[in-house]
Image (cartoon, rainbow, N blue to C red; front, side, top):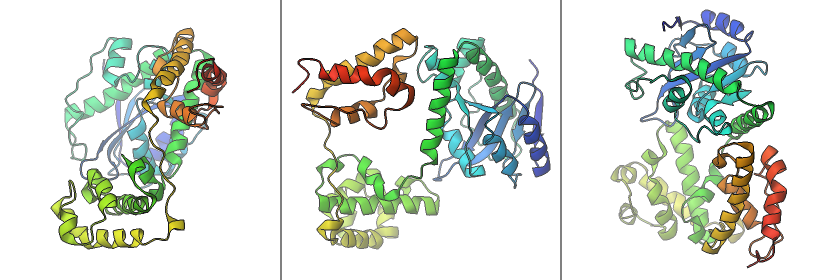
Length: 377
């Protein structure tokens, strides 16, 4: 099937096309980007499909993204993407905004019980019987001119995504479609919420094994690494490797020789930032006790495995009733937060991160499962 490909390489053409797209009920979106040696993704191509043509926007030529930002933010136009978390970062970086309402076809497939976390090629094959070429996914999208194969690959992606969207949307009930858009809104809201570098240490491996004084150092190192990675636009591990953070906080080296012996410490880091790291450690270690972080929660004990299995069974039963992928129902973080609210003897409270339709349909059943006879420690 021939594809009508339309290139957009200047601001005026982008503005004109965005005005036309805002008159449509939906557009499908995709991006090609590079992220090898940078913290932020570098957009190489933005693809837009509306069922009539595949538009390829060259981000190396565009200066004014405001019309595209207005399209992304237009509540009357559904934005369709597949497994879109990285695409969202590209849009946020280019335009300062994010697409909404958001229809993720990977999630839609799960709502229809076609499979959970399905790759795009597999979904296209399942719905359309088309086998997509795979050769261009890792190619250089910043080169100019793009190869004919790259152009074809990029255009076919959005051409087929239109068909995938229509095939999924016609099978979704109004209720499931509402839930899907709710999940899309939550994904966008989470990305809009700026991550505080001073809170990132709480997700560090084995943070719970550190004392409060050591956590003060851990917090300072995590926050410095994050801010430097953003400022220098390099991957976090190029600044300071993940495996070095915990032993730095635990042992708190005071001179460069000791610093260089820390697990997985790259010699380049010692040369480039060694003195800065030693100063950070000294300053954080010297904080008074009232400035230390609160302890990080220990992992739940192994004994909760039986309760987790019982709670997951609640979600699986509801998934079977709704003919949805069971993995959609209950997230591990929600179940763990629920157990932490009252383990081992209760009473339990539904956590804030169990929201929307999941809270409405599953919340009471989860509490009842935990209050059943024999569920106390």
